[in-house]
Image (cartoon, rainbow, N blue to C red; front, side, top):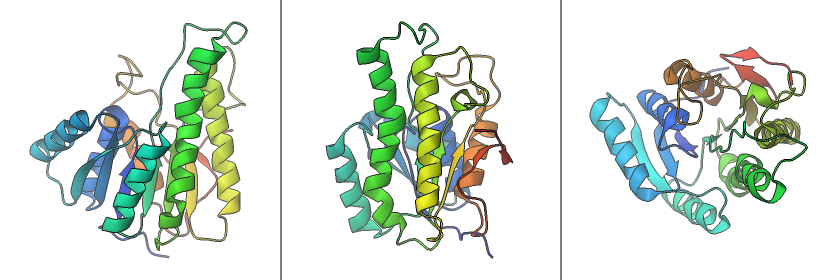
Length: 240
């Protein structure tokens, strides 16, 4: 079957910097209309303007206020997307926080760090899926990409940042569960680990952001006969 056509509508959460920002650029370069989700609308506008000024873009990048921990914010954006486009082709749940290397599972701050991580890394993606799935079902090539991490792999997991690891493992479980539910709809649902890249969250020493983002874009633009319910990095399967 043919790959999804260009000029699709894509929504990227947590996209005013880092991997999310680069994902917006790469999708726009493919001709997509990209909704750049940002909690801070000013930062979102500045990021979108900078991308447009510094790069050759075939599509569009449109900044949108979006806080994935807020039902009101998500619902307002849903109404805007519904009224403007009537459907959504690609949802990329990129927003993520708290690589809590300073904590141990046995003593972690459950009401602080752990709750915050789960609220954004798991529930944020889950909220987005629940609200926007009706619009994705109206697409001919629906794609949902949950930006995860190998830190959330049960197979690979050991001592590490507890809130982050547990929240990403739960996001992986959500990916599998949703992919099973949507198996016969044509909507492909996958988790992607972009790898260690040099971002504000990843820190210095990682690889180029462009390579990490390309893993996400690969999953967002899979052909109709592509995989679903998988966990990937650089287009290759990872162990759960």
